[in-house]
Image (cartoon, rainbow, N blue to C red):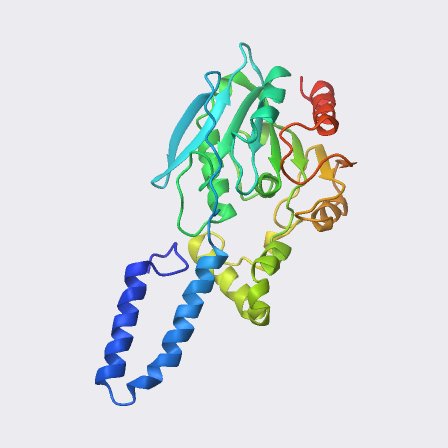
Length: 311
């Protein structure tokens, strides 16, 4: 099995099934293989669920003012959309959420562009223009983003700021961990988070709710699977995929939280607020977790933040 894969591919699974059937037919007491085969298939199915990509793909951004950047990460296509200002300026790197894309972020991208900063928006794997990936993980997306940042013309950039929504916030927080570095790390200015995900544990428990009786085993399988996909993190534990160990900003951080978050609730917000960081939290009554391409309350706070701390 590929060292960077948690589950078997379809061909390998089919081969196991064929061998099991032959054992049942040809070997005395071969029927004893049946429960083992069923457990194997259940295990493989659960791994597919744990590491599945988005079931719905959002539209692709198509606008003449935004240049498409294409690069590669370990043989995988990586895409982003960039707009440079005429002169040297700060850059805001935008990360969308689950089942979103740069196209769904367009109004926020335009907001930053019109405030006088460079903008770079990344389409995560399985989103927008980016290809699907077997065994989706946030770790893969962070590596993609780091490769994409190396395509930025850093000579045009003063400081680098990140803006992440929901899962995109989780990605931006993860990049704060000391294990991630690059030219952008030394130039970080601020971090902006919109209704961010700050821990994987509650998401995983929701994902596995149909198999709640198997939760302890599923947690073990998830961690072991992540270690196989990312052998660079062999000692990973559940604490490592939750703030503060996941990543904690050392820069001023704007937190724009939907007061009534119908997707993540307040757990993630409260977890971040409990940390000893330079945090500027806002609970927004008019903001919902998603479908907020334009929100006056949020956008005014973004504009104020950019005018006071970036441009």
